[in-house]
Length: 194
Image: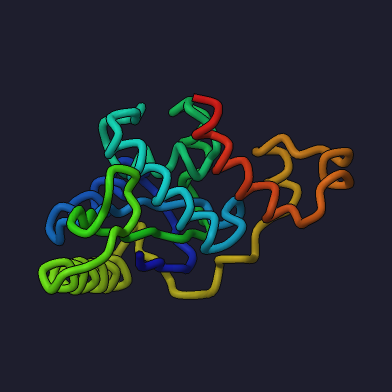
């Protein structure tokens, strides 16, 4: 998984999404943009990818598109309209763009690695190369919707995150962890709630 961080000024959301989709199609990867103000950390997105791939592998997915399924898990909801609120919106926005290749070999029915062969290592290297090339293409986008580089991951808006994930004071006080821990738990619990 590659992440592209920065600020995007999105004039036309459909055009921005289409440009990212075209990059994904060209490189055989999934490209999904998130509003960085609601993404707590890299582990948040890694877990969303892992669980989305497992749901797809089991035929339990809600969305037809892998990027949308990842977005659903990252948002901790099965409601696509609600999950889209975690995506990029028109205007200037701090973003994190996830680039991830679907690499089936070497995974068991749960989407986990199950050992490895030379073919698995080759497939993984090919996937990593595709991710790197696609991430570079996202970084090189120009014009409206281009991503101006900058660190955005981890600089989330706590109030926005608490409102989106409906985390109240009582819950935060009751857990042995941080707001990021609660969000990652919400992502994991989506699998249980199905």
